[in-house]
Image: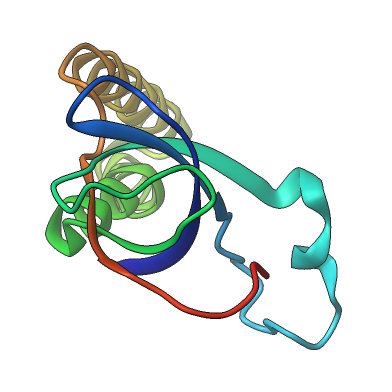
Length: 131
């Protein structure tokens, strides 16, 4: 996945903190202006192999496969386990499925946090004003 960001500060010799607009889940980007809210900005630490400096507009990329895998874990797994539990034994199974999926999401989040999270990399310089 690719986003445009602004470098805020350097984090050592090979990393930089960047500010990027949080993606919208509504699918109506640009129609409601809700993403123009400054609170929708997220700060991310990204690898900086191109030597970007504070104030530079850059293009950052994250592993699409990793992001989609996490989305499936958070959104799809609970539904699948709920339906499987429901089909097997009804409500008790459905509740057990949701509980198990919640535990798996919690475990995956802790493991990912210990490993540094989703890795972002600054790949190029970008032009234009920050959105």
